[in-house]
Length: 203
Image (cartoon, rainbow, N blue to C red):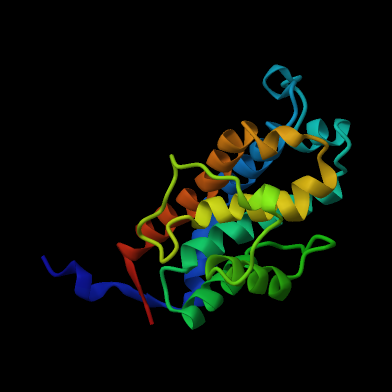
């Protein structure tokens, strides 16, 4: 069997764009759920409400939900892209973000990318109360930093949850559930990239 010789060549940008399009529905759902579970009545919520409507009833306007979902997706893709060298990972992440039609207010690609890069490399640390958060049940040995998904969760807490959600449980017992959902976003992107690698290779 020589099918590997006939893989289609794609650029890093195309890899990021395609993988994110495949994963988009799951990323949006996991992002919304990770935010929703920070509220006590999430599991008993009115099922007729969309995630955005539910979150708006809890004081998070649609514009902020949009910002959170984009940041969640960015974190997931960038962490997955650390499996490549830095230039390739940057191109993959940039390509992934082009799969979104609109840019939410408050989101900046360069700022987010540089901040996460510093976090993954251990050059940036969080507030001590956030830095102490951990979930030993999740790790990603395929990545240079096996705790990348946990670092994503800390980043989202510091840059969104702490600003817009009045729930301190995420700084305690709630972190396990929250980080599991955030880590799920990383898993989704990694699976999409693995699936793509079966029929494509980077140019």
